[in-house]
Structure formats: C-alpha cells, structure tokens
Amino acid sequence: MERPIVIHDTTVVTCDDAGSVHHAAALVVEDRRIAAIGPSADILARYPGAVRVEGRGRAVMPGFANTHTHLARTLARGIYEDLSPPHEPPFTGGLSPLPLPPLTTDQERAMVELGVLEAIRSGTTFVLEEGVGIDGYAGALRDSGLRYVICERAWDRKGAAIGQPGPFERDAALGETGLERIGALHARWNGAGDGRLRVGLAGWAPDMCSPELLENLRALQSALDTIGSIHLSQMWGEVAAVTEQRGVQPTEYLARTGFLSDRLVAAHCRCMTPEEERTLGAARVSVAFNSAIAARRGLSCHAGDLERAGCLVTVGTDNMAEDMVEATRTALFMERVRRQDGRRPSPEEALTWATRNGYRALGVPDGGWLAPGNRADLIVVDLRRPHLVPALQVVSTFVHQGQGSDVESVMVDGAWVMRDHRIVTMDESAIIAEADRVARAAWRDLFTSRPDLLRPPTLDLAGG
Image (cartoon, rainbow, N blue to C red; front, side):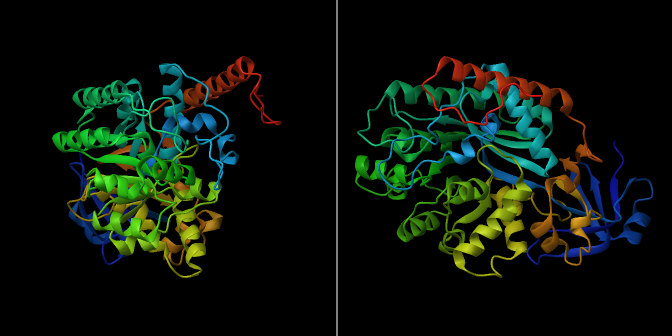
C-alpha cells in the first residue's frame, strides 16, 4: 500500500459551496482520494509517515475540466484564428476558407499529444474530446494520465459542412457508420486507464444531423448510459441552415427530436434567442462556454442568461489551444463586457465554471472541488511568480493574472502527471519535435497540391 501524500504549509482553494480558502493548511491524498484538509500542524501530526510535499508559497486548487475540445486542431494554430466565417449572409459553410490538411493516424496522434501536453501544463485534469476516429489515439490519451470523456462524432448530411445553406441530403449509411464507430469505441475503451477514460457520443451539429439520426443517437446514449455532446448555435450560418431545413431554430429542432437532456454538453450556444436559452435551461443542458475561440470570432454566449435559465455553465477551449487558464480568464472578461458589469461574474464564479461545473457536467460530481472523500484531481500553483505577488486574494489574483506556466504540478486520481514542472507521463521534447515536423509538412503538402488556395503571406513552412 502506497504511503499517503501530504501537501503542507500551503493555501487550499476548495471551490466548495462556500468558496472556502484555507491558509497555512495541508491536504492529504490517500488511495486516490482526498483524505483530509486542515491546519498544517494538525495534519502533519496525524500523518507522520506520509510523503511530504512542500507547499509554502503555493496554492493547491482543483484541476480544470475542459468540456469541449478537438486536440488535433493544434494543426491549425496561427492560421484558423483569423479566418472565422461571416456573421451575415451570404453563408458558404465551414469554419474557415482553408481546409485542414489530411493526416495519417500516426500524424494525428502526434498533434493530439501536443495538445495534451499544453493541457497538462496549464492545469487541466479532465477533458471532453470530440472528434472522428478517436480509436486511433485513445491509447495515447489513456497513457497521458488525464481523465477523459471521448465523444466520437456522427452525422448523416451528405457532402456539406456546418453552416452551409441548401437542402439536407441524407445519407443513412453515413449516419449508421458513425453509430457503429461510437459502439466500437465504447466496447474497446470505456473504463480504460482504471476508469479515467470513458466513452461518450456526439452529434456533429443540428444542420448536419437528421431527426432520425438524432433520435438514434439519443437512444444509443441511453443504452450506453453515457454523456452526449453537440455543437449548437456555433455560427449564424448554422442557424440559417437549420431554419431553412427544418423551419425552426436549432435548439427547438433538438428539443423536438428528444436530444436535449441533463447529460448533454452543448458547445458554443452563441447565436441563440432568449426562448432557445430557456428551452436549454428547462432541459438542464450543460453549456461549454468556449470563450477564447468565441472572442477570436467576435461572438459570445450569454453565460449569465443561460445560467439563470437553468443551464450548467462550463468552460472549454475548442480549437487551436488547450490553455484553460486563458479560457477561464477570457470567460470572465467576455461575460463582464457583455453584461457591462465590472464586478460580475466574480473570479470565484468563473473558476467554478471551469472546475466543479465541468466535472459535474461530465458525470463526476465528486471531482473538480477539494473536500475529504473527493477524487484527488488537483493542481499546485506557484504563487511566487512576479505577476502573482502579492496574492492577497488567491482566486482573484490567479484568475485575473495567472498564466498556464504558473502551474507547477498536476495530480489525477492521486498520481502525479506533472511534478515540479516536469511531465512524467509523456516524452515532451520528442512529441514537440514530431508535432512541429508533422504540421509543417502537412501544410506544405496541402499548398503544393492546391495552388488555388490563398496562402497566408507570412507562412513559415521551413522552420528554423
């Protein structure tokens, strides 16, 4: 039996209902759970044989839960952020005028691992990954040591992209293939990594899924007893397409098919009417506020309105970035600007969105906050950094001023994933070198094979 771990003489930010912060405190990890939190001297006396971890000048906090991301989209860094689709007609479909370069399974795994490295370094302990062909890199996710819900995607609109106008041409075989991928992924990977890896499912978006497919996905979700996800009201082109195809707004369309539930994570929710927000809230849907990509695209969900309607607001990173410190702060800023309120949401509210709410949305209510009996998923933040001194109010200081690099250590299920800034579950230098090589070669091959594409003028494909 492993010895308990005591992080002592530290500040413990719990994210409990009262927002408790314990100073000169210690936290005990034993058997993958938090065993105790209390005054440091008392805890050290109670656990004389424990492994001691110095916490002076640091804070122990819950790990972040990223409720919506696509890890392989690290491939599009520096390119897609400035190529957002229009907010007014004419809508042509897709998220960018440039296609993503195709990747082999091994190449995609390299980009995924790069995203996981960034997630770990910025204090993420739980990730909802949505994509196609996740089986090709599920093993790498398991081995990283983080906690995941992996949602394989299904759709049955033929030859189209999100936000593309025109009729819905259904390909039933395409949808059935997606359902089969979900079933196979669940059979192979659900519960892997001592339960850290769970398999969910996803419909791509309302304008990409027929009523029949949405009903089948909902039935499969119930049969598998798992989490569902969907992109919802991500862009105005999607709203126009669904209105044209179905005669109703996207949220109403999902409601009519029975797809909404309290086990659904709806990503984005930016282009919605107040009535749609109330419909989501009545179904107790969780919303992934992908704040950083929302800011880059000049759109934002109405987080406060969604919360008042009954939704559980969480935080995700979506594309090109995995830094949940940045995403949490951006969620705070975006919502304050939208409300024209310089005090609300508070830093404590934003941190709860990004930690405890995320864990709850992903089906782990005993994680994402620190209390005896809860899962030992936590991070250690170095408060001695110049931009965090003086940390008179730890939560406010970290949410407003913190950086991903302030995260010193990351623990999941009572095991260190990063310790003293060194990732212990992955070969960081090799992954970075391989991902850089893969990305440059992939974009070089795309522009060579497609001279018709508009190449960004300062693109560097050689490196150096």
